[in-house]
Length: 62
Image (tube, rainbow, N blue to C red):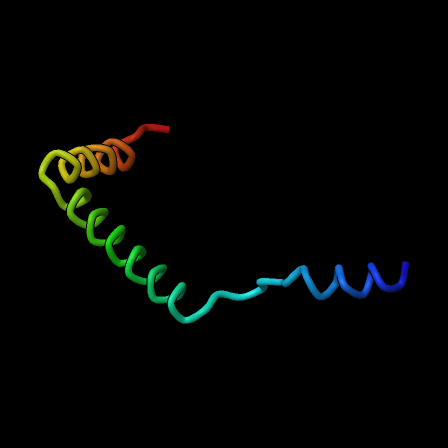
């Protein structure tokens, strides 16, 4: 029992953190997503919809 417990602990490796390459890929993916989101939010239809939504919210009567 002791032998199998000792070897099973050695065979199972814990990956608790990300490596530098994973950070780089994650950073690039986050920047790409931010760029796409920026383009979508600044497009004409979305910008006018957001402006009308904010205008309607500020003009609401309580």
